[in-house]
Image: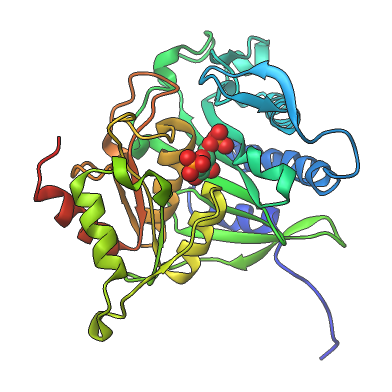
Length: 341
Ligand code: AHM
Ligand code: MG
């Protein structure tokens, strides 16, 4: 046999998966390809972050009162421009924009989908060369095509997502996505500029040995979470404890590691932040969809499945516990003892 290098590219896999939906017109596939192109542009910029004047903060503050990084703005603009060009989307809700962005050109008015995204999650880590990510989530619009999209198109439960994914800009750049047919991962091969298939059906272990949480907030955690952390730290050879504590502070990177190795990520409610920190639309729902499709699970710690929470605001925050099934169940068990609802 002749030696050859023919990796399966993102587009090839998308086309294969599209054939599972006989009436699909390929619009969603096109959208995913555009997201991948924007990701390559952002990736290039991130790789050069230390060389050009794009690290550090910009002068703006976003709706959550946080300083926007220059790269946040670049990523936001790049994804919006690339995705708008497809004409498939009626609009975008972005963590970096206070209001939804409505596309009102003739093509986009008939667009069937809307997209929610965090264009650059964990961006405060860029200045110190730590992995960051882009997270996205796609819904079918509920308002009639031919009109401008409305806020209700975005305020849908996570169970209604038709696709979701993230790009991790790490030691290598990867794209992980789901259209409800499993969770699939790709790695960017910089030499050919293509995302190449890494794992078609990712499966996360049901149990793990890693817990990821900002333990600096320990004093403010609910009793159930404190007890779970003590459980993680307890020496018990039968159950492989103590677990390892690993926290990067970059959701995509922390989740990606736990997805591969088995583990749990927690950003629970605290006294001062009863809704936690992470955003339901841009961070929790897409990550929950990917986790579930890989055999994991995601809850708010009070017995509610993340993807069944009805959003009331595009920037809504929610306590977030995601990862290996049995680990998330254990947290729920500890939390339910105290009924801190
Ligand atoms: P961002 O969207 O402003 O970047 O914030 C989200 C990030 C997540 O990536 C990460 O899990 C979390 O904030 C870390 O928060 P903390 O520094 O409070 O631990
Ligand atoms: Mg974020």
